[in-house]
Image (cartoon, rainbow, N blue to C red):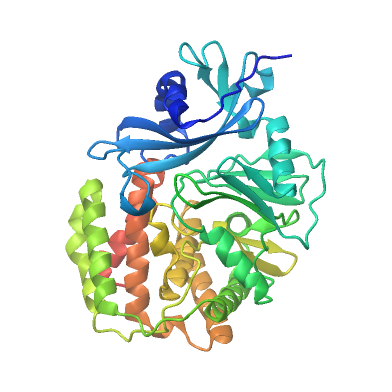
Length: 456
């Protein structure tokens, strides 16, 4: 039988595994797609929680401190400054050869010396055992596994790890269910558990309802993963849009239907959660300006456009406040929607992972979601040469028309509001691409130039 780790996480033992893992993780973490601190040197790694899920698999919550941050916990049970990441580590003497690309390294010292550590989500056996934990509610140390009692998840579903670029990790089981394992963990209920559950209770069929989930209560309460039905025959909006561009097809019928589906979800969200009063444009503009200044500090290419971009935010203070603030998606784009048959579905309600969880769970103008989708049409149009701005323009018009027909108000008539939110989204895109996909930076920079110079 292969040698595996069996460590019981008593308080005195928490520091010990980091003697073995610290050097390996310090090298491995920054290379992961979901690691948020790529532009900040990791100055400290600390173990916040460790649980043996089953022999050969350790569940860890790891604190990554960066320059200027400390690992001292904040008052009230909040996590220490820096970032907290969820890791599921396989620990064996001789891992199977198929796990080669998941390897983190061989431990040289400490309690795990002589063992090889790898990302357990790549291991079919570990993935199946994780599903079994979700099928049977219960606890493992600080971890709690729960499921919808009215939904029976079958056993024996074959797992596969999705390769798509994501800020989390997703496992598909038998093409029937998908488990999203959150990587960057913040205190509180994750919107990707909270919102789909609330929409399901509203009878909204546009969002797959959660059937199982797991959480932790230490070192703080947080959502760790959510299992939902998998739409096996669906295609995401990004792929559909690119296919339409490649074949020269029109996409306006689909865009109009997507606009109506977005409005339907917004209406259901307004019913499921308390609705705020009219938007406070002055405060919103100030927050947008702060984000612009912070982004320009990090991305020098943005700096020449700052004066022009500020005009979009300054004009916001005198705009019609638009519809009341409410719960929204928070990161809506073509990659967050699926089309199965003739129906559109909305997924991934986590919001922008880089923003605090409290902000992602608060009320915002629905125009923010609309602006995100409009920017996505422009992203798609710029994936081919020559660029086809008329394709993006027609899709934008059709999307807004579909939204207006279902919502009862037209985003196009909120020009100042829409321009400000689209500008704010483009600023976010610039910062994101500079950190994660530098080759894509010209796409949002083209929008920045348009919005700053032409002011439309």
